[in-house]
Image (cartoon, rainbow, N blue to C red; front, side, top):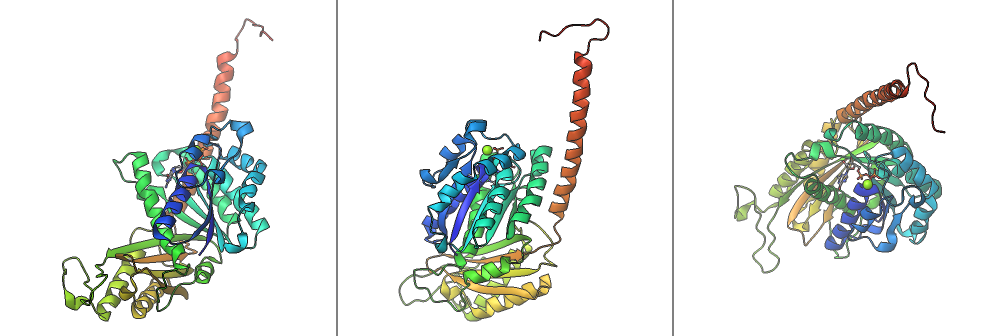
Length: 395
Ligand SMILES: Nc1nc2c(ncn2[C@@H]2O[C@H](COP(=O)(O)OP(=O)(O)OP(=O)(O)O)[C@@H](O)[C@H]2O)c(=O)[nH]1
Ligand SMILES: [Mg+2]
């Protein structure tokens, strides 16, 4: 499907920037337009793939291009004041060519945390196309203010979008890695997962014939109804013999060069095992999959490695696991790919311990901050107060 992507703040901008690069590399044609919005000039200049005229600096009068320093109330205020500048960039795109908007932001900071819900609300007021959010939760080691920001932003953002897709940095951080190096890996993960999902709804120009191609309306219908969504992903390398009459070799771990394994039963088994790995493995937002309201299964890869039976079996397995009556499934043929991948979109998940924890820690942080504020006011007064002799202030 074709998306208008708007990245707010540093994390949002970097992820959108990577989507543009992914889109160009794979020819997936999902990014109809990419706009990065920030209050920090340096962050915008650091992007590589988004055209300069689609990098929008807001709040210049207030913060002089230096960011809002994790003050998300200020981030929201600035986004409201300067919403016309963002709209100006959107005005340049033919919105009738866009299936949906995707607003991406890290929810723990200031600019994206405050600004993303504001722009989502604005878009929903003006356009009929669905507006989705992709919200990044902070790591638990980032501290109280990030957690508080994320919890408040999450609560606001979800109200303003048609569906909130969530990625949790906390469950993806790798200990021992540098933060920026870690984000590189994490951002690749985000873009690959969502790239395959949204790419599935876009008919490829290569003329691949598939048995049951996923259409963008199936993605839209799975996301319709709102709530929180999480994405599972698993992939496996396959060896494709591009020319010659020798047929194809499938390469399975521990079973390499087994010519006989390349048959339809094997394809079916591979697909169902990938579906299980995707749904039971690490999700973008870990949660209990039972109770999921709607789901979509996409199997991507070279057409000869896809079959309807595998997808149908995987789809029914997801129905069993989630208890949902609304599980869609289809394929996404990619003849040039050397991998088969399963993507499971779980939409309207309800049992998410991480969100409960985030809210709990945020409430505690909020109370602590209030205590510290009133305490520090008292401390300052007792520090400055002259007990006894009256001193006169200068003015
Ligand atoms: N996945 C991912 N998360 C990031 C990245 N950069 C920052 N984050 C997360 O996003 C949150 C917000 O950080 P930023 O995006 O830098 O904040 P901002 O929106 O620019 O806001 P200010 O800097 O306060 O103006 C943090 O809690 C980080 O966990 C990134 O490249 N990838
Ligand atoms: Mg920033």
